[in-house]
Image (tube, rainbow, N blue to C red; front, side, top):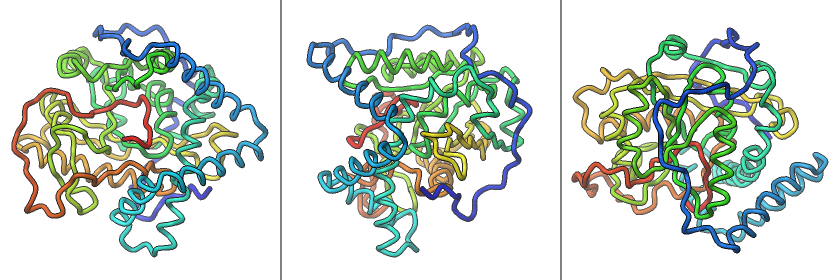
Length: 369
């Protein structure tokens, strides 16, 4: 796997001050109580069977010798690419928008790697707690931070931590919280399996982060920020409801309206980050990651901007995170589906400020997005 960065990446200095910190959740005093991250409608015997099958498949694959595990990843990726043509074609469209200079062969190569990366992410998400918790931060995370992000560490000021489906987002939580962004919450939607949802909740809290269900986030997030907590969001996906249209890689794209409303409401710094595999390593063997914090947008920079302008600013930073490591991106979600062909056809009429869109936290992702 080629995990070298693309040209044009923001140069950042390696941040080593906290390398000796032990990666552990610590005794956290959660300033805001939130509803349980669960949906008991999806708690039947069949859901339990699905849960144990998933855990068994992940655990079995992680236990395989490296050559066999790599073969399983490649085989499952090839099967997904052939059988799920809709998401394969969506990836081609997405990659072509992000890298118009790529040839058809180059686009096809990134599509193949996208399916493999999805399989790796599924395994990393299950194994990261076992392999990094209780160890030195510097042994597993190479931290690169913009000076503005370093200034926020230990300041007591709550921030919004924003990333996308880039790199190994499922492995970011231990590094983000241990470097100093704690207490930490993340907005998420519980999967349609309550046993899986509870597993994700336990795993995240064991890594120092508590999940906020999407319903009720409009109330919980401002309270958390005012209490000095940090709140994470994934913001590069296609919302299912009440989208607004803003440019994403130069194309009209549906963006989460309610996430923009939330950002303007809390008036907190936006800290953008991405968690990638460390260059020259195999995350499933070495469990080493490159955690980058390349950009901070302060509230005054968004003052007076409307929802579309806020979404455009956020998208610009997400584009940079995506372009940094093209072979470690979840290209498979249909990012431009249902979006207008041109901006002239876009409608951005307000449709309310409930968080019923799809602002998700660092919980999970699937090709069904």
